[in-house]
Length: 438
Ligand SMILES: Cc1ncc(COP(=O)(O)O)c(C=O)c1O
Image 1 (cartoon, rainbow, N blue to C red):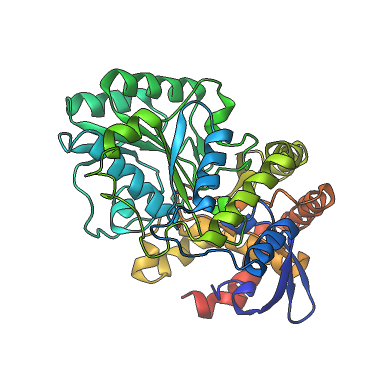
Image 2: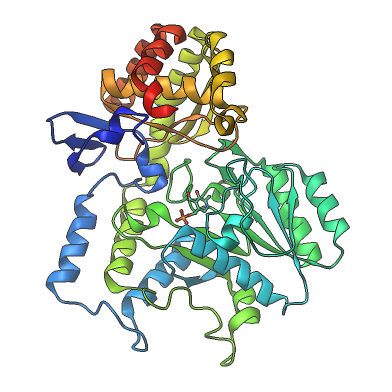
């Protein structure tokens, strides 16, 4: 964290798209809380919902009482999601939602199938199960995991077909991010519909992981919803589902899939994910309000508004700086800037880095991208990040409450930063940071 200026600074408070530091600076937060802050920091309606809940001393912990908050939240999820995606479980984190979905798929097949497919670039979390389902490069240490995990090439239907054919009648689930927020790649409509067809034909449970991309971020409520009639068997969501205030996630199953897996007295409690905090009242009330806001303020339309400024702006900057920007890709309010190039001396620097770092083929990219992030922060009070997956893009992911002026300020600032040239940016960054980095 201390590789960047922001690692050492203290935030006094946060509001909407802004952080207010103890030293008086105001910082524009374009990380979007890494998917958590579609609503921005401390959204007034979210704060009011939580205050109301607390002031009325509502029931927080219910256990075996009927919880109107769990019921209402599950009902509302079923209302906003298409088809018969009607049955929700409400754990606390994304990884738990993924693992719940996978267990449900396994139970759906009564334990008779033992293979699960995941994409080569996937990110699904860091617990033992979800970590073993993560195929991306950042997963470089082999913790024990669930058995039977097989990779396919992201977006390549032939690769999925080959993996299914290699494990006849044994694949219980296919897990995929329709839009991969850690690599800024996405599946084509043809691929997603083909996958749906294959899963239906082979009775494989299709799980869409939209933990990052839900609640409007990419320009539709969920990424898959831009394609009418397309339906996973289970959907996972988290992050902005909690309105930036509550740590809650959900996996939502199609009704027949849920019923076959758990709908009997003996199986009903086989999986209840985090019995300790499951369905806490205020967390559910917060998520209910988070959904209300996403619908009332049309968050998909807000993301498309941001895209209308961001997409042409980023493309123009990439064109003006071909020596620094290899590519820009994204959708809605979630874009990646692939910073590349820079002085050749960096190759030498990468070679001289300690063994662990020197093995990283993206060290050079990461250094240059970090230099851009650092300059955006120091010179323009803008907070961004880069991912550790795929080609490590700099992520431009503003909260959906960011104004047009915020987006224009970001674009002007990025242009000014790149105008300095990568050599200058790097020299400055390395001079500041070489000690703490290496
Ligand atoms: C697509 C996706 N799946 C799963 C997860 C894991 O969620 P969590 O960090 O809440 O366990 C994330 C988190 O970034 C994610 O982006």
